[in-house]
Length: 59
Image 1 (spheres, rainbow, N blue to C red):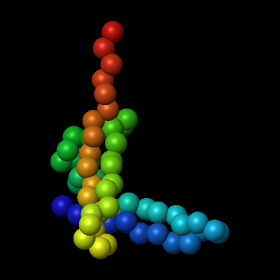
Image 2: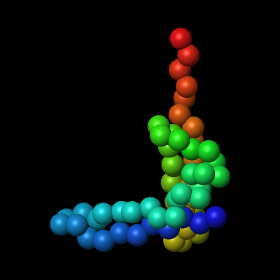
Image 3: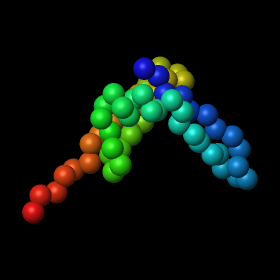
Image 4: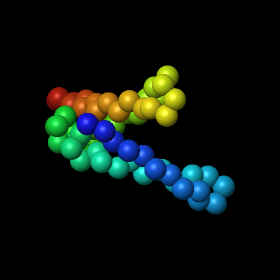
């Protein structure tokens, strides 16, 4: 499963978009409040995407 990011110049910075994440989110059962974490891989041009569930607080 692959996610893709793209960017374009926006004034003096860049605007980034992460595409093709819906299948990743479904497969890992992610919901609102959970996180997608992106790591830069030592292989040039490659990144690792990881999903992390939000911590559930109990009373």
